[in-house]
Image: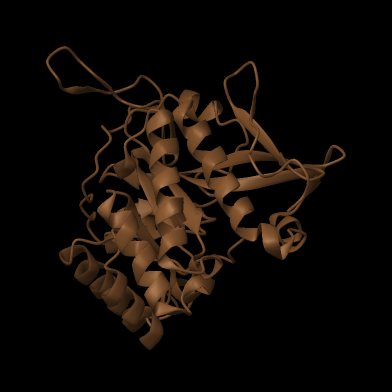
Length: 314
């Protein structure tokens, strides 16, 4: 482990957001919004995906390059460091309902005892940040599915502490379906390239709509990511997708204050009803009134002309 990295240090800027470091790298959080959409096209931020942004000597370092330079002995520590950084920053974002998606790589854990220690630490960090564990969605990364005992121990441990579980890059092959059956996730993120192939034919689109409906019936929230065109957002509404993410909606921001201006969170009136904020984004019509936030699935709109997904850029 690099010198000085055994106990993480966090610095807070004048806006309340935290940075930390690993060796020569300065680490910051970037948040990308995840939206719901109602029948009129009103968008509401339901969650943020946390992404790490690294700099070395004032120059940005891409996430793949940064993680490739992490020493093997430090991998779990850095994984933990990133999650803690994101949770701290979420606590200062000022949102009362939005959830936070953070990554977990089960392959970094050697045994159940190390998992328990990590989850206990995460509970402490979450509570100290002023969040409930139920607002944190733990995204189980694909590369961590080798050791079933460790994987199940991680998922069961997180769920027992009331964290939510998400499975990424679902593509509906046998292994993906098995993953969903075994992990019983709260959220299922569909692979953008796989969805694009299915939207090339009418039969494929029909099958995709049926799959979305089946997962919703099982109590699983469906999320489409990698959306880059406005017509893709309309397609999500057509097939009943509950959550959406992509550059067509909003890009990640290191200090996500502009999200509050464009997509303010609904507030509660004295009667307990949600008041609609004065400004919010509506597809092809800005500004307009936003729909109240909801943790429940949104209803699909009547069928519209579907269009194929564009190339996914991350």
